[in-house]
Length: 253
Image (tube, rainbow, N blue to C red; front, side, top):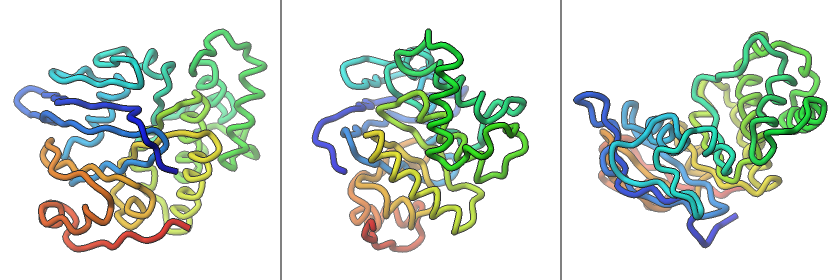
């Protein structure tokens, strides 16, 4: 699914933590309907950039626009209700809640539904649990789930806020190859069924090169390359900084 107009605009965004410049004048755009991969070595500033987009951090400089809205420094709850949601590299569910209740909280918190009744929220949460294959675990506490199930719960909670733009942070981390394949299929299904755009941090190059139409590469907080997966795989700067070899884009099934 390819888009033809910009949904997200990041322009000259900078974030410092004391003397460390974690993100340094980064600019890129994300068109509606595409998957954009965000790659780079550990410490490159990828998660910090996602935190700036979703309102966890405020940038020290630069602007972030989502559709017609300037969301620079906007609180994360307002950004969520505009249509941006995310998953976390380290899952952050409500561990003492059942999976069903945890997703219901996201339904209530989500876009344009702050006054939904709890019973309606639980009914809708059941749909998202079913979508990610966790409905049989609806009465299970989040703390009792496997890492794959936690990843799927993260995805269900993010989808339950009805996002237009979904930010994924290393959703494959800790998964075995079979689980990674299932998770990838789930993400593709979600993109198509819910008509979402995806900005995705991922370290598994074969997955992100297959899944994304556009790749943005960060290194020491700066953007060093941007292009198609094939262009990035053959970019000498990227190979030297991160890939350590050449990856050919494979066809999406």
